Image 1: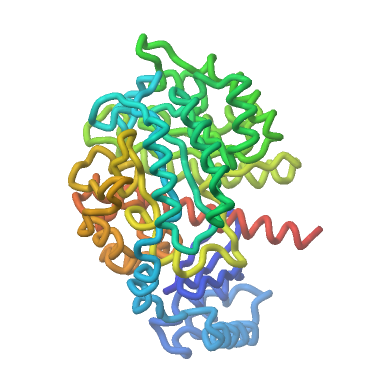
Image 2: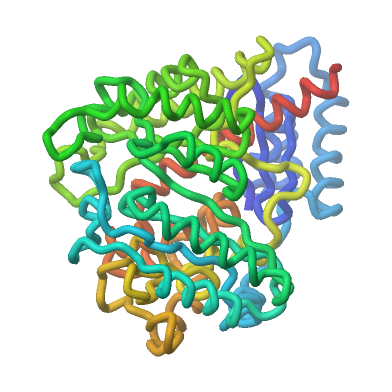
Length: 462
C-alpha cells in the first residue's frame, strides 16, 4: 500500500507496510502513482507526454527514474506486501494477563465544573469519592503481582482532580518506592492536574517523583474560561497560569505537557497554541473534544476543514520556530522516521483492558479511564483480579486487522486501530472506528511526517 501527498513543498511517498518514506521529484511522484495500474510502456508514454515541454527533463531521465522505482520495489521499499495480519492476534496473546500500567482514579471529584468533561465533572456517572491509601496500596500490589517479568511499570494519578487527594498520592508513591527493589520493579509516575491546588509542596514533590506532569490549559483566556470554570461559574485561567509557569520553570522546562482541548468554540486552535507559546510553554498537546451528539461543544462537519488547515499551519509554525531557534514539541507530531513503535505496538494498539487498566476509588477495574462508569465493561477489582474475562478477551482480540474500516487505511500502522473508547462511544462497538477522529489523525500524521522530513533534511545541511 502506498500513500502519496504533497505538503510543505515536498512530494512525499509512504510505503505503508515497510514504513519507508521517500521525498521525490515530480516525475517519480507521477510514475509511482501509476505504477500498479498501468504497464511500463503506458507509464513512460504518459510521463513523456506530460513533461514534453520541460527542457530539464529528458527521455533518458524518465527511463532512469522508472528503473529506480522498479529497484525500490524489488528491495522492499515500495509496494511492500502486508505480512503482519497473521501475527496480529498471536503477538497480543503472548502478553495476555501481563499488566504494565494502571490509571489510578485517586479522586472521583473535581474543583472545576467543565461542561465538556467526559468524566461528568470527575464523578464518572457515579458518586463523588476519593481513593483510600488501602485501596491504592492494593492496586499497586495487584500491578506488581500481574506484571510478570516486566521491570518498568507505569502509574498515572488521575481524576477528577488528583490533587484533591494529594496526601494519598504521596503515601502511595512512598509505598511503591519502598517495595519496588525487592520485586525487581521500577515505577514511573505521572500526574494530570487542572492546576487549582498547585503549591510549592506539589511542585517539589512532582519534581522528585513524577516522570511527567500533564497540566490542563485550553489556550486563550476567553476560550479556556468558556468551559473550564468552577462551580460558581468563574473562569480558572488567571488562577492557574502563574502556577503552571512556576511548575514548568522548576522542572527546567522538561517532562511536562500542557494539554488543551479544542471544541466547536475554537476550531482555530492554533491561536491557542500560540498563546501557550507566548506564556513560555513548549511541550504542548491539543486534543479534539469527543462529546455526545448535539452538545454545544461538539465538533461539526463545518469545523473539519478549519481544523485540517490548522494542523498544516501548525506544522509550518513548528518549522518556522525551528529556524528561529525557538523549537517546541507538539505531542501528536512526535514521530521517529528511523524506528518508531515496534510492530507489536503498531498492530496491537494501546493495550487497554489487557496491559493497561483504570482503577476506581473503591478498587474496581475498567479497561481504561474512558470506560469507567460503563458497568458492562467492569473487569473485576484489585482484590479478586480480572473476573470478567469475556471483556478482557474482547479487548485482547482487538487489533488493527479486526476493524474492517482500517484495512484499506494508509495510517493503520500509525494509529493501530485508534481509541477503543472513542470507537465505542461513536459506534457502540470497541471494534468500530470514530470516523471524524480518523480524519483528524490522518492529517496529523501527514503533518508529522512532513515536519520530521524537513527537520531531517535541515540537520543534514548543517
